[in-house]
Image (cartoon, rainbow, N blue to C red; front, side, top):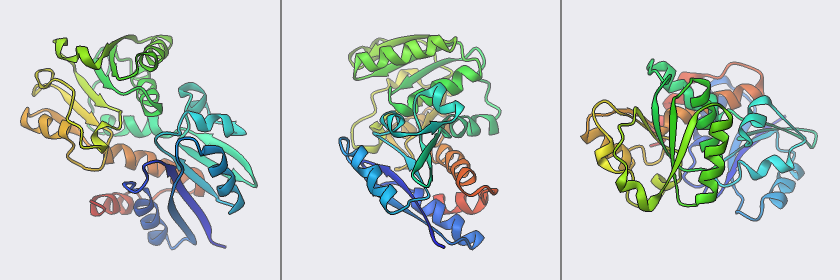
Amino acid sequence: MLRTFAVIGDPIDHSLSPTIHNAAYRYLDLECTYIGYKIGKNELESGIQSLKSIKISGFNVTIPHKIEIMQLLDAVDENCRLIGAANTVVNDNGNLKGYNTDMDGFLEPIKNREIPIENSNVLLLGAGGASRAVIAGLAKEHAKKITIINRTKQKAEELAKFSRELGVESDIVSIDEVEKLNELYNLVVNASSLGLKSEPNIIPTKLITDKTVVYDIVYKPVNTELIKIAKKKNAEIIYGYEMLLGQATRSFEIWLKQKAPYDAMKKAILGGF
C-alpha cells in the first residue's frame, strides 16, 4: 500500500524535501511518495484536517507553523517539549505525534567539523521556531552567550528568556542597532527567512572574520548574501542544506523505522540545486 508523506508551510515551492525523500524511497524501492503542501498562515487547522482526510502517514512542518502546530498534536517527544516547536509529525490513525529533529539536524554539521561550541559567543538572527531549536542545541553544547537580532522585540525577548532558562546568557539587539555591534562572535547563525527573499544581508560585515564560523540555515539559494560575504572574509561556512540533510534523515527514520540512505539523500539535495 502506498504511503504518503508531505512538507507543509508557506512558502513551500522552494522546498527540497520532496526531492530528498522521494530519492530515498526510490533508492530503497519503498512504496512511498512525498509531496509539498502549501498551508497559509491562518489555514493550519483546516490544512491538518485535509491531511488527515487523505490518511497522510506523516509530514514535516516548516515556516510559519512550527510553533502553532504544537496546539494540534496529541503527543510530543522530549525535544518538542523543550523547544516548544515541532517539525516532524507521525499520523497514527488520526492521532498526531510531534517530534523535533531540528536541534540534532542543526548540531550535526558542527560536530562533523569538530567545531567547539563550549564558551563560545554567538550572534543569532531570527526568533521563530527554528531559532528555538538552535538555542536548545547551543545550550546543550554549553555556549557562553547568545545575542539575538530580530525585527519583533517581543519575540526576541521571549527567545532570550528561553536561552537564560537553559543556562545560557542572552541579550537582544534591534535591527536598527546592529551597526553598533562590535564584539567578536565565534559563530554567526541566520535562522530567519531573510536569505529566502531578495532582501540584503543585515549582519554587519565587520563582525565576520577568518576566525568566524558562519552558519546560514536557509538552503536555497545555497549561496545566500550572508554566505557570499562569509566567503569573501574567509570565514568557515556551514550551509543550510547540511542542517536540512541531518533533519531529513531523522524524519525518515522516525516514519519508516529503518536507517535512512544518507548518501542517496545528500546526492539528491546537491542535484536539486
